[in-house]
Image (cartoon, rainbow, N blue to C red; front, side, top):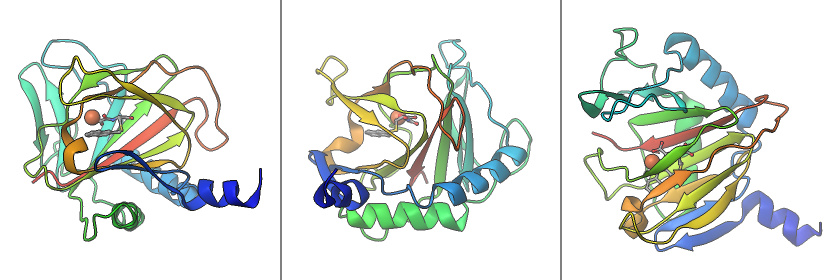
Length: 214
Ligand code: MD3
Ligand code: FE
């Protein structure tokens, strides 16, 4: 790999669609600190398999941090101030999470990004996320910043209608994507994960999505 490729991989900003940018490897150096902070969060608010309003148990395991966290059950999807599993407030957003999300958003053209919610998804091999929109946040003017850690995934990125064709994007450890502007309400999902191992996470992928929910 030549020097230019290396630099692209470390700092490159790749436009994906109007308002959407891929920052390849943006979080690679911070990953060990991010994973240590994540271990503390999961010790307080453990990963759980949520039930969808349709009655399906998700293959992805989820937890949250921030002033609001994500919950779903038979009655619907919503943000909550307390973790229904523990009855206590969600763990606070760690400083290293806030810094990374703000820096990534700024690099992608969204300065001043201060998320109040971080949804954390954990994928084991075989886990997937069907095509959906994220529409439970109050302000669609703010982007969503997503960070991938651990084993690779194939992400599906569609249009504003479920039936729009999807682009496939390989996301690997340390990749960050900023979804703003017209891309904020695009349909998206994750294909079933292939078996793999990563030295820092073992046989799993972690995805953090930073949102302005309130
Ligand atoms: C595009 N997570 O938590 S991250 C989710 O990999 C979610 O766990 C996926 O979709 C994951 O809701 C995808 C990339 C992502 C997140 C939110 C988006 C892409 C998005 C919102 C609007 C458009
Ligand atoms: Fe989503």
